[in-house]
Structures are given as C-alpha cells and as structure tokens.
Image (cartoon, rainbow, N blue to C red; front, side):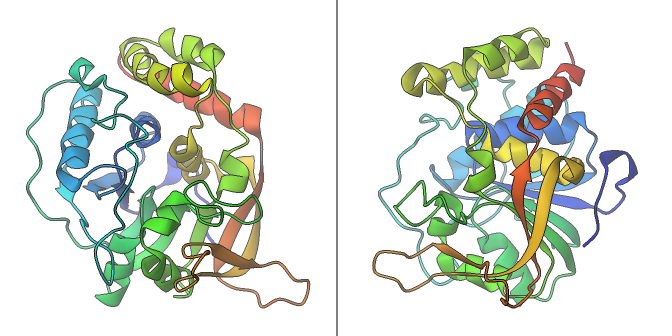
Length: 297
C-alpha cells in the first residue's frame, strides 16, 4: 500500500465528514497541510445532513478554503440510518460555537464521482456507493471501527461503523486498499485544557477551535480528536505502526451489529486493510497543533 507525505501528494482527495468537532479539526489539519482536496462531502452523522453541510461550509469559509462542500448520504446503503443518535458535538456540530464561524450558504449540490483517494471520518455509505458504481477509488483512509477495545456507540460497535454496517462491510471486503484508524489508536489521545491552551495560542483559527472544544472538555474533562488523528495518518503515516489484516463488519448480530471483526490469528488470511495498531501520540498531537498554527492568524 502506498504511503504518502503531504509534500508529495498529487492524487485528488475526497473528504467525507459527518460534521462533528473532530471533523472540523481534521479539516483544519488537511487544509493547513495543503492536502489536495477535490471536494468535501457532508454526510449524515450525529446530526442531519443539512446541518452537517451548513456547518462544514462555514468551517471551510473561515479557513479561507475554496474547496466545495457537496451533499452526500442521508440514508444508509440498504435503508435509513438508525435513529436515536445523540448530538454529542452540540446542536450545530460545533459545540454551540458556530456563530464564531464565517457565514456561508448551505450547500445544495450533490457530490461528484470519487476518482482518487477517499478520506472518510463518517459512515462508509458514500464510499460503498462509489464502489458499486465502479468509480475509480484508489484507496480509502477511514477513521472508524475498533479491534479490541469495544465500541463507543454500543458495547461492540464504533459509531461510524454502527451508522451503516452493510456499507462498512462492503468496503472492507472489497479488496480496495483501506487504511483504518480505529478506536484502539484514537482513544489514546485525551486532550484537556492544556491542549486547548496550545490551540488558543496558535492564532485566530486556534482560538475559534479552542472555544468550540470547551463544550466537550468542560462536560467530559477530555476531548478525543479522533478524526484529526486520522488526518495525520493520511499525511504522515510513518507516525503510526500498520499491520495488514483481513476484516469484515458484522451486519446481522443482535448485540454486535457494526462490530468490526479483524482476523488477528497468526494463520489468518492477509487482506487489504492496513490497521493502525500503534501511534506516536505525542508526535501526532504536536502535528495537529502545529498545523493549526500554520493557518491564518
């Protein structure tokens, strides 16, 4: 599987986001590191599609990025997304601080075909539909799933996999190269007030992010930057330890729907999913904060 450094990336990157605070942080990292984004695709997640799309457009407008935001999925591969989701990131997906963002029109254009690498921090619905349409997806970098730590939406399932298990299974078994950044890695990052202070000292964008992230830190004492960790994995994969595995997603289990099942047996079949199994926590956190500092002050 190819390994990219952001200085050398030329293939178009299509970012699929579901509108949380960690999605916003990830977009800031991608823009700061000059990842060649072709489009940002909003998909339904903790919030409805149009709220996600609107807040995402405002984040990019605040960053001064011309990358278009387009509309992705508002239902799963084979039916509606599950109901009863908790707006963990606030009713606006930005910790209630979206008034700090530049105003922007709510996007209304559908996504364009996926021709290159897909960076996905939400459900894999859009990617699965692209594969079914035989779009030329070269690789997928996905923040999602879990190997051995259990889930964060149910006891078994990570949120992005839980949102659309058939789509996750379609992508993971497709043979398309996938780099998966699971909860086992991302939950090792536990940001608190110290990291917010570092962001706040990094200029205007850092101050906006720090203000928004207070929503979670003051509520939970910690913020986990899941999607921003995946953004660094895209740009600088050498900060992670990878192991290629065979993987599926449970689609029918009464108690385990959305669980990602990774074959870790010594004699297991080698698949096409490179799973991040270790990470330089300090190095990745430093790169996130440094990237934010590169943005307009």
